[in-house]
Length: 277
Picture: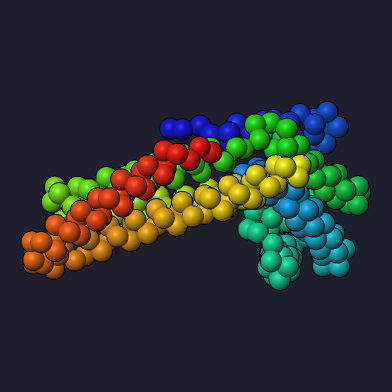
């Protein structure tokens, strides 16, 4: 099992949220830990966007919970109705699922009160949730900021090499048909993960003009490298799909196609070796 930076940051954020909640003597520090889990994001930029959305969702949940208690009481049916209204409003605002979860936890945390001083109780629960959100943001900002550039480059190289290897094996008629089909499906899944990594890298913010220019060039370069790998995967799919038709071509034509394809593979690998992230 691989332990990534996000796992450590989530643990640190929850620990920080619980510590601060205990330091301020909030009665239910576990709610701070819960909100910290929902607020953790893979990039600093997403963490900033999530902070804004989480604050909005927390305010919405708190306001509707307080209004529902004063108007209708805290019957379980009222809690369920309030949750449905909050979900509908959050969906209307196009908030993410993790953000909606924070709003729902806030509603439940406030509407479960047993004390007569309801406003004070609701304020403490609201601040407890906010504490967890800000703890996650601070941890994501300071500890182990993600470096997606290296991951993107390594993933591109890994997938391209794997695809080119299978094209060569197929060209030499050394690839099993069933095994190749499974490998194509696996490579397709890995290319989807590569696209996700690329967008994570794209979302990383740079703070200097020179860095922004360099990153813009790398974004274009990596985008084209991913497109080339995707085209290579398409070639492998067509070779697999048209295997019988290809075998019935004249020997000279098959040899010419294999020779041309081999030259393209060699040239592409040479270009990859010349590119450094």
